[in-house]
Length: 58
Image 1 (cartoon, rainbow, N blue to C red):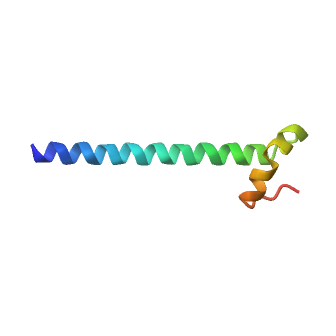
Image 2: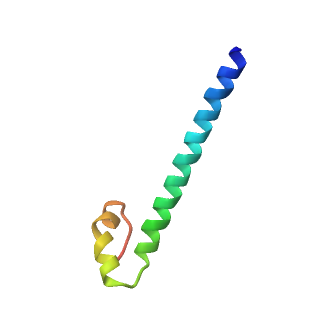
């Protein structure tokens, strides 16, 4: 019964790691997509966030 408990715990850690990786990738895609957008309203909405992350926008 001990092995099933350790398998359950490792699967939970694996799922959390996958979720964290997906969140990181999604966030990066959103920041970089907005960073290269040509619309001034989109640019202004994310301007401070990009500077906080040292993303050059101008």
